[in-house]
Image (tube, rainbow, N blue to C red; front, side, top):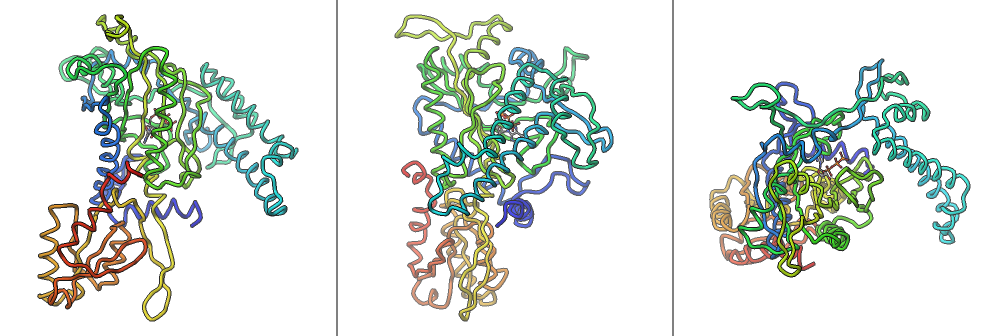
Length: 516
Ligand code: ATP
């Protein structure tokens, strides 16, 4: 499936099969806000469960919390979000369309990368087996010129972003001849900083004093609870605190479905370490998090690390795990070495000590922090893009047919097993199928369906990613055996009713994700 096509298909599949709907659709929708439907919420819960199990339950030294969305407004002053959580925005005067200035430049850079890759692909085709890609990339003049152009733009962008050089950023957009995709014109406004936090007002306090923010990240709820958690759980360094929860950002441009939303969910873990040991743990978590993605079956070639060119105000090292989304490699997860910035700032502004007493060193200090942060929704989009497949399968009477199948890892699948009667109008078959469903529904998410012909029912279960379908036929009535059909291989096997739970359980168990 072509990438452009895939993105459109993922979006329409999500709607058609009850995974994701546009929020407030009956009022024409609310931009960049989405609701999860019946299968979407199951898949989302499974993703969260996989993360929680692997981070919290598999680590003796990581504990979970669930902090409130509303927090004292000073928290966002201390964290730097009030002053520095900005994106540079620019408007096109003719179309009145608003853009992120840095994203305009990044898109331009993406085009250069595409040109380089095309050049390489062309040469590969021409030279066949004899092609040496490394040598070609390091000697071909056209490739070299484009790489140099790319790197120069990248360095300038990093400098302008880190140092808030907004005039220079606008000049760069003009120099590169970037035009608005709607009007085609290069008639741009000045670049301005735009704060991404949503604010609201506390009921009984008027003015600035009562201004509350909707949290733009869950991490601060962890930092301000650091000592509470450490003391109440008697953890020793290094240890981590994990949390899953909603975050809100007033994104300037939000056009990529659930990739960039204004209300989204994060899974974050802050790992507290001795000062000076943060780089060791930074490498450890980069490696551990990549393995988490690979265990799900995400192809290695679709994942890559990308080191940050311009570090956030709190970090001394940062890398993204990027996934090859249908619109290219983009950030899926961030791993950041956040130093002691946050704890120090909260200590200063609150006047309360946020230090750890290290019994081995016999010394108090503010720990350093390594963070892993992934958006649930981006992970959802990654899982869907990876799983949605159209394939040709053998049909009846030797004819081939095309099926749409969601090849999600069985541990993530919204429905684990569907029980289907061969004929919907036969009370004996439907009664037996219901009885089987009523037996297995206690063990995992199962579904009974008799709303169509068996072929149609299979297709529907394939489309929502159900790993197993159980067909109840006339033989079942005689000997209590059923046909169990496996989603990916289409293999069918006859097993006894008493075996169903065991067979299904084996494949859907999250344990295998850790063993693998
Ligand atoms: P980007 O550069 O794409 O805006 P970011 O660097 O601001 O992302 P972080 O602040 O590192 O993102 O947030 C951690 C994670 O939260 C991201 O890796 C992403 O998975 C998720 N995330 C951030 N912003 C959004 C959003 N607007 N919608 C959905 N998920 C998001």
